[in-house]
Image 1 (cartoon, rainbow, N blue to C red):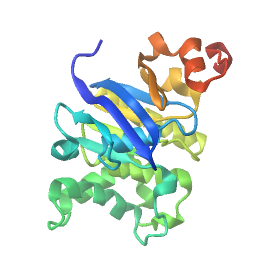
Image 2 (image 1 turned 90 degrees about the vertical axis):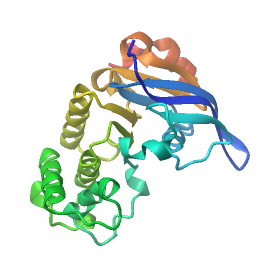
Image 3 (image 1 turned 120 degrees about the vertical axis):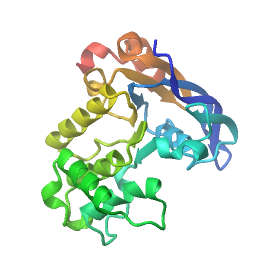
Length: 245
């Protein structure tokens, strides 16, 4: 068992129009894991990470980042939103999008300088997008856009990376590139939390998993809890891990 807790969720309940989408969730995410949040559509997966990021307000419960509220720890957290939630027609280049990731450390008044630009270019190179640095974000493919947003997260030099379905709508090459970077982040001691829908890749990609369906079903290491029982409890049908592999 890992020692230090990166994210602690206590008694979390979130409701939309008086209908609970998360109910009484307790969750401790250890530092240094690469964790998938899995569950059926409408399970509250995106809502859970938005609550962690203080985007969604709970009606009950608390969330701590390294023992403190998110507002005091926001510089420790980088977020890659779901692709569908981004206005891709906004007139800006790939490099400018990545430079936005430096604003948290600079503040909104000070402009990025040579150091920040160098870091942004290095991040673009890391995700294989350096040659597209001057391209308008709207002119990139879905996979290329996702790589740019990952580069933006990387320049934040955060301790925790939270991602909402980063593999959605990307090609196999991009998916492999993204998971390799996420594994590098974990290897360097970072905590990575990913909303994920492809059950087949969970054992290959992740070392920690949380099963969610409005309530938390189970959380722990993939080798210990990614099993038929938890899959069936979460999805409501008779799942077999052996059939996923």
